[in-house]
Length: 315
Image (cartoon, rainbow, N blue to C red; front, top):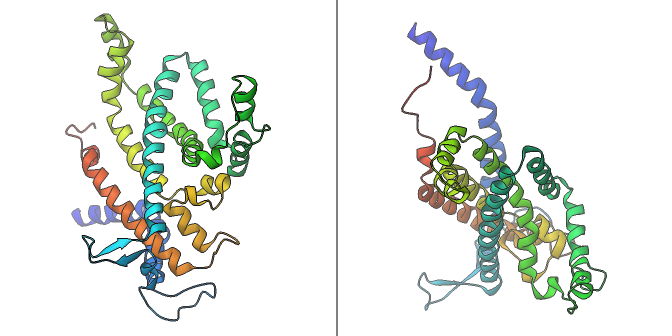
């Protein structure tokens, strides 16, 4: 009897977890292994391997006796790392977390119909095709008088036109990606707020608590795990994000993040693509950064407690 039960349990695990494990292995493990191998080769446009070498990493770092670790970053790679850190930090903190939280708190405070309307409006950028969304931003920040932003500055405020692509490129890509990221944060946090038992709000109002006290003492503590999940997930997502950066800014040095650098060296047309080994070396470093960041944030947010078995089993 115990053997049949264990066999049934194993078969159920195989049926339900098998497809997920296969997809995880095919879409995550295999690409990492392939990238690891290609990074130590000389693969280029011919897609052939002539030799195994560390030459690609020499393009990113160079030996230095004065450096702590015996090497220092080359200028282009250091700039890409710096821009990536700025881009991820600003987009995550300003939009994905803070603005997404504000949207969730605001729309749940409104009536159901009005709140649903505003959530639908904020979901439009995410539901729009990437090319359409990118073209809209290009029109908005057009440096001439035809751009929407400059039309407002000139006709409404009487100011001089500005060139966001040239003068404030990082602000532009943070805003463009931030509006996309804020919508997913809004959905997750809205669902979490609605799952809070209603009697907690009624009891707090009966005790004389105002909206700010309810938000601080009831809502925000209940959002700890959703906020932790958004922080970890969106950080890893932003590390490899380059789609909207490329559509709006192209291969501009002013917005050349790590993901953009890897893309332009491998697949971007007419920009020096075909350097597959070089792009794989950059991607390998990005993978290591992503894994280290995920482990650090997992530990700091104590996500292990979220996945622990409940102390009370409900039959």
